Image (tube, rainbow, N blue to C red):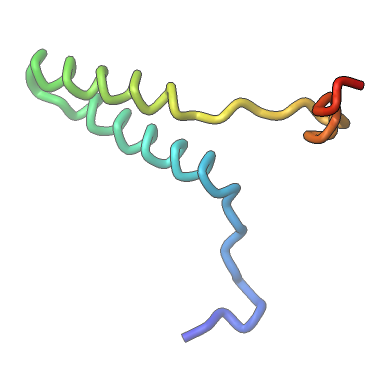
Length: 70
């Protein structure tokens, strides 16, 4: 069943949205962890996922700019 153009969920920004959602899930798991071992494992996963988070591009700068040395 479709949304029919109303109450349609907003489009996520792809990879960045996926990483943010995964980090939120890991933070919840860390808060609910019962042992130090579990917290350490989840903390390590959080650090790994933060490394995947893409940097925001600088507004107004073209990706092609600077490729040919100009």
